[in-house]
Length: 297
Image (cartoon, rainbow, N blue to C red):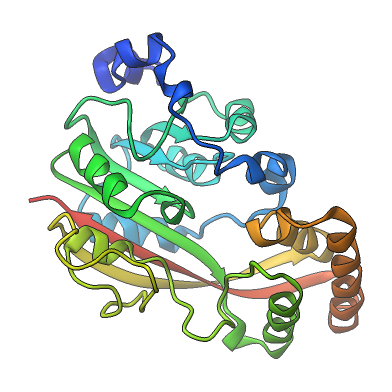
């Protein structure tokens, strides 16, 4: 079956898409990423093989042949990873330019849609995924929608790549400088920082008890979907050119929303600082991925 068959066979609610209602329901929260879509696609890190193996283990779903709705797919970094492992994927995002980059590099269906109001029929997916994206959605609405479109025995999963400054002094210093320079910085050197509370939203427990830690403003107990939740961390190492590392920094919301001249000065400072640590221009960056999976009964 072709990828287009996923749409034609009823995965997408044809009436909703045909009437153009999806676009009219969108909000503007992802415009900041549309402004940096090219840089995002070129320099954001991929996800390691161990992440996809952990996803299969915790979800109980083999990716090869699975029907996956990838919510907040952006330029398709996670989408391509899922496709490469044999999944049948429909990508969903609110950013038109982000999706344009995805469509340029894949042949899977890609819909401009809101993860809080998915244009799919109930029970059509084996797996709903959020790669680096769930924190942009409504905690309760998004998970309820994911559960609705997932079949019995299916799963909902989200994961986040992050630098691991505890493993390298140069990286810790880099993150501290960025935190001091960017008022909207969110990251691992902030006191009390942790991953978004997806596990709590899926299980119904209060945030703070799992591997992801506590996050202010998470969903209260009782709002969760009652899924069987498992969590894990995957560590890996990224080798990246200095200029790509700096461009990657520009694509994070806390920097992409800043004045361009301020960002240019900040990156010039980081270029000099990091160039002294890595004179050959190639950085070795310790990374880790947090994964939360909720299985339906």
